[in-house]
Image (cartoon, rainbow over all chains, first blue to last red; front, side):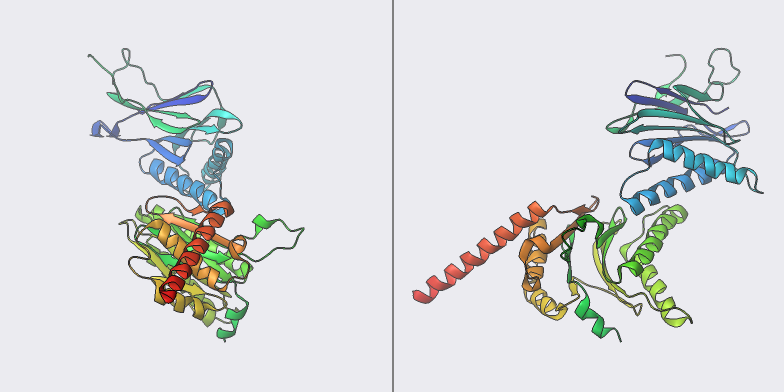
Length: 168
Length: 229
């Protein structure tokens, strides 16, 4: 029951992810961060199979950093998204596919803000708004108690106030 | 076998300060029609480590690429950035392997590797084609390295590296000892603690060179006055 959401604005992308790390019906952590900083202006939000999420996201993260070291400048969000998709697609028809659902959000100097939706079958779509999961509150049997919210704009990644959900 | 190499190598100087590490290299003058910026001798290996190499540029590209991949691989497996010693050891081990296997020739480069460990300690290491590495407080490689090293031995004191600027000026002074045409042929890179690699612009270098020249003149004046009185 993990939830990711992203909204692209005129000059920013706003993303939020829930903070629960669960193991079947037990909440292992209530303050888990599901966002991975790929570079100064790119965030990867990753949910799915336990273990696969961190393994895959960190692998992408380090490869994006390696590109920066090799070339002296960072990958654009579009390039990073396509790189991620290719990796996911290559693993899909191997013996060890990664079962992860992703949102990639970034800000490009020339193209502006961008939000990319990717699922475990390695489908990639650039969209103005996207989400993974249910995220319902009133009509759902389970409530996600809190969310980490971040904003990406031309000045980089900014932490927004953590959103608690529920009776005030 | 490797001693003769020094004569063709461009001069380089590395200085370990208190809160800063400095790498200075002599820039080879390029042909008129050649684009200057494709000749880069100082490269970042990771955000907190960089290296300057002297020797065969093509060999250096291979070593630097392997080192960059290893820096990220280390971060992935142990969740910590490499220490300068670790990556130096990795590069040295790589070089040594090529001195002991058949069908391969050694990497024709010497490298000065500088950076900060994550506990904040500044480090400077030197490697050579044989695969040995040593830590230094200040060192020079390349043509007339001996002269420069003697200059550093005389002038590297706690006060001469007291501030970041002093450390940078010491590096420039050391290079000026043996570089023919002054500031235009010097490329300088610095890493400050918790800050990424910064390559100084030629304007900044010119300003510092002018300061050094002025200080030299003032010293000479003082000496003259002392003599006459």
